[in-house]
Image (cartoon, rainbow, N blue to C red):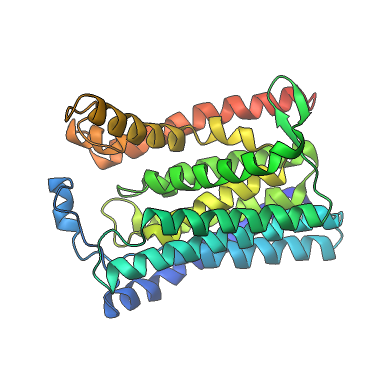
Length: 337
């Protein structure tokens, strides 16, 4: 029963995302929601000037319709009903992702319509992001959520009152790390596709079927988006999409009470984020020298003459390896192996 519903969720989400692109891309061109490349960017990216952005609406629509719809149907047609707390984690998590997507939309709108290439200011983004994270955590708490979290090789650990501020910081950090991973054709969609697959596989091990279905809907949506976004991209996800993906990945991890699993599964996100932090820090310490040719690190490899397709393949392979290690850790914890 669980396998059937995860397949239905994935296939439905894929179909909605892929078909939605047929209408969405011409619409985005018509309203001039198009990419503006930075002057200091990669030279090869200059040809991408004018490519439609906000394509993230493809997987946003598909994952919401498929994820919520299939979870509701699973509970209604013979599945084991989810507890109110688990329902809150799933649905509030999806709405948290939607809130992050809305923040991204505001950023994209400013870039595309107001012609301000940097969009929202960093302070504005952070304030809105922390509000979104806090609203999610408050909702889960209201429905009886506790402060326990899974620590690899240790088990469930109660963090106490510090759980909430740490969780909010972690969510905002991961969401921005996912945002930084967006920058070349197919990269963010591919990495997130594989990441959501591993959460889909983990969820049944801890008897959280609804999370598996939601993860399958995200995986299918990412794959449907890649029909249009894989190199050469006909559309970009924009901050609308990348912030939504970050919020959804956090929602999956927290619904499983395993936020720390985002570190191995999202290892590429983490590397991308720290490449920027290290680049900025090194630049300031050395008064102008650079640690990488360009950051985030996928641009460094572009400067090293790696093709966009090669970067996507390598980064996806790294995600699969570390995701498999995370899955084995959970399998060991649940005595599955």
